[in-house]
Image (cartoon, rainbow, N blue to C red; front, top):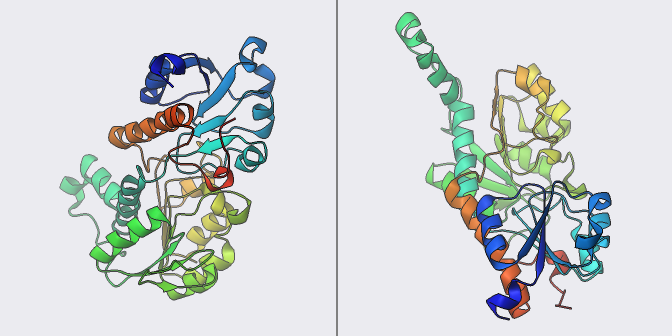
Length: 325
C-alpha cells in the first residue's frame, strides 16, 4: 500500500493524544478527532469510514461496536487495561500497545522514587529553599536508607527486570512474585505476594491494572511487609487498596511509600496527601519528551505496519490471532 493509499484510510483520535503522534497520523492518514471516546457522540458521517483508532485512554466495547469498519486500536502506553482487548479479540479487531520503548525511563523513575522515599530528598530541597538550612542548621539525619535493604518486585516483566538490574547495581538483593516463575532469572521466586512481602522490606509494584490485580496490595500484604517496609508503586493505582495503605502509613504498619500512580487520577486521596511518610508524583514514570516521542512513533508505526504490511509491530496477547480483514 502506497503513502497515497494510506492517506485515504480514516483514523479516529478520541480525546487528547501526544502531539508528535497526532502530527504523524495527520500527515499519513485521514485523521478525524473527537473530544471523548463516547459511543453516543460519534458523528454518523464518521462512524462508517473509521478503520483505525489511536488513543491515550479508554476504548470500550460499546465504542468499538459503533465503528463497523474498525480494524485496529493503537493504544498509547504499555498498559492497556482501559481498552477492552478481550472484546476486540472476539470481534477481530487488533489492539496494539507501546512496550519496551518506555522500559528504561520507568525503571529510572522507580529507583528515583525509592531514593526520594527513603532519603527524603524532596523535603531536604524544600528545607534549603525555605532558608531553613541557614536559620536552623543541617537537615535532619534521615531514618531511612537503602543500605541493607531487601527488595521484592511484584511483576517481573520487562520493567520489573530493568528495575531489578538497577537494584542489584545499588547493592540490594532481589526477589519477586509473578503469576508464574520466569525461566532463567537468578532471583528468588515467591508463589504468593504475602510470602514475598514477608521475605523483603522494600516492595515495588509494577503489575498492570485489571480485575486480576485489583487491590492485590492490601492490608495483609502491608502487614507482612512490616514496620521497616517501604512500598513503591509505578504500575497502576488500582492494584493497591489505597485506604489500607493510608492507614498503614499513618499507624506505622509500614515505614514509608512512594507512589507515581493512583486509582482515580488525577484525584489523590486526602489521606495519602496528609501522611508525611509518602512521596507522591503525578504519574510521570515515562514522562520525558524523548520517551513519549518514542511511544508516539510506535503508535503510528503500528498503524502503518497494519495497513501497509498486514501485521502490527506490537500486538497485545488478546488480539495476537487477529488478521487483516
